[in-house]
Image 1 (tube, one colour):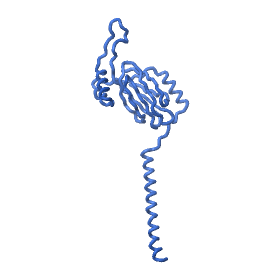
Image 2: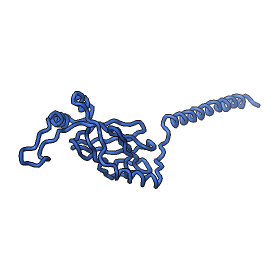
Image 3: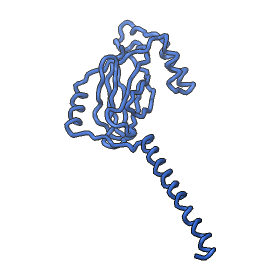
Image 4: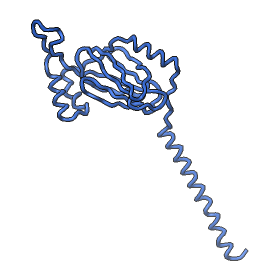
Length: 203
């Protein structure tokens, strides 16, 4: 072998460890990303469960939800992400006492006290990106559903209805659970754009 060939041969062979090292780094990095950010798996909801949840919701009645004590309302209001004008208006509404109806008027003529209540929301199946919008007494909150429950606060009066709208379906339907004071409700499997009315009783 001549001198030129001897000089080239070591250079060619030295590339192998470098290429092998790069392949190993890419493989390990890909595995690590998969562990940190596992691919989302769409919800697997059978026809029987869809029917069962719809029938149970139809028989629910009113879901009792806990009212936030007056001494904690200021801190809760500050955490709700309201605009300054919205925060001011809701703060005044919550501070306003309930008034009795005028003599001779209907019982509904009195002003009901606005309270803040607590709701706990979670994804009952896979955390695949399901998202809902909760609306109550003019307040709206968008919630990305996770397996770990998310606590939110909304205003309302005595008895009423909280609207829940499906914003995003991660696959297989929006699978929402809501917890009140003493019980939880598995909402019917929802689709994007669908709105359900949840009757509530503030306690």
